[in-house]
Image 1 (cartoon, chains in turn green, red):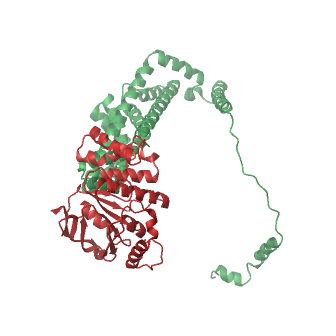
Image 2: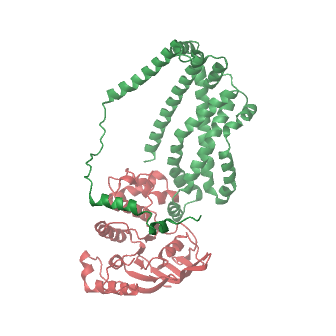
Image 3: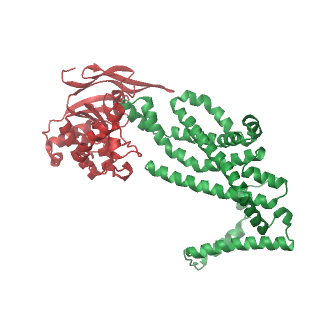
Length: 293
Length: 262
């Protein structure tokens, strides 16, 4: 059989019945529903905090009870009380401080190195369009490459000490910084350049007095992302091969079924991560004020 | 070219090569700007006003012709004239004072010295108390003042102003015109002024050059012989109205139309 187009069906009267229904509805208008603008009132801060703490207490309590009653296997999941004890011994043994410092050091070094070199590389593209066009495909290649896949190679080259963690953290932050700084370079106001050249400026003057300052907000915007990436790089480096660090503590504890220690190390890592994030956010706001933004 | 010529364009033409063949942005133009005069260029969009400025400022090489400043060939050299672009282009990370000294700084004047030199000018020309503010805190009129002072303090005899008041409201614009005339009288510079606003051109100028499009070229030179200083009320005098109508007619507008020739 052949398909009949809807218009033809309509002509044949197929749609008559529904249309008639519709018309009846229109002839007898329904009463208008009166609605109010939905408004949510703010709770007092104390109430919000109380609920937040409540959720935490309930979650930890449930975990402990579940482990006690055997709902979950405490061997795999550990339990809050055991984690608390392990936390104490982890700090008393002094491992916590040295591991945290190790991870902190490689993260900060990698962050600083990757961001600085990456930004400098990105800014360098302002100097020559041809140079930028030649290098661009390589950068895109390196960007799409999962840098963590290079970790075993980096460990081989830089050893199992601090250097390999710094290298991995730098590799992760470098490309992002390059691309962001390059985006900043491309966004430099062409008229601004014309103004500088009309004043008889040299290229170096345009670079230092116009290009670099106008890219600063772009580079600042990448700092928070980079601190997270640098931490990832450092921890993965420790996973692959290391004698120190929180990443190594997590891996080691997992392999020896010390699940409580895994949780403890993850907790310390989160605290470290949050601390660095807050510090970088503070740095960011300071820098933004410095450039009048 | 005459002896008192400050800026002389000799058969300057600019042609761009495009996919559709050559585009004549500027047919050969010869323009004589005498020393210390206030000269306006008016014309429709695309008549090459900005191209002329770019050539004079050395930002665009002419296809043919020469630019002479004080009789010396300055074609293609930058930093010879003060050029104020349409946008104020104040650097947001610099204070007003440090924006104003940019030209001197680029020229190699030590920053402290340049600041000391600029401060009295900021005081005298209505930016006193704003020295250490950032441009973001300034009104449109104030920003234009700062941009214009930056151009003036660059210490070149010729300044090119590309529609500096185009984006301002009518009242601010009138204030800025008075202010510009005061500055021009004080500094004694040679000013070349591009505008779309015929009334503005007649009010401010000693000479008006009317331009036409396709290709960009100068079609008329109209001397404005109204006495200075000019009170605001000059705009209603028969002499002023006649000049304005002549310009509008040359721009292809009926004489009774409003002054916006954009």
